[in-house]
Image (cartoon, rainbow, N blue to C red; front, side):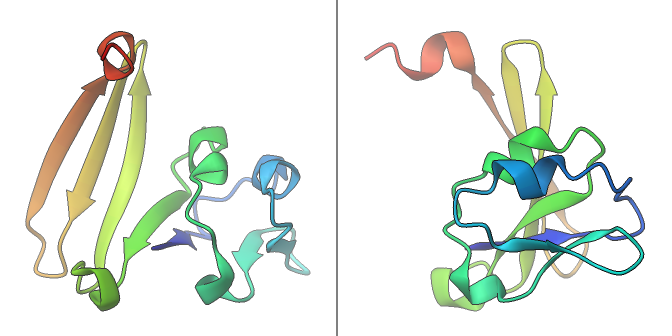
Length: 104
């Protein structure tokens, strides 16, 4: 699992670079963020949670059954929505309530 950064949506704030525990996110000449070596991404989702502009999404590679699927996170209060888009355009959503997630 890795991330993808949509450089058209990136507002050049640097929040993702600051939060990345592996220091893997770089800044391009134009100020946008990019991931130099996606295979080194730990998949921790820190940058995905930090980006408030939807510029970062998970990329689920074929090696884990994703076959190029893309996953974005949307926060709404205590709810986290994982929006998964498959290469053919099919989209589905998984919703997690933070109040319930660590209950057991």
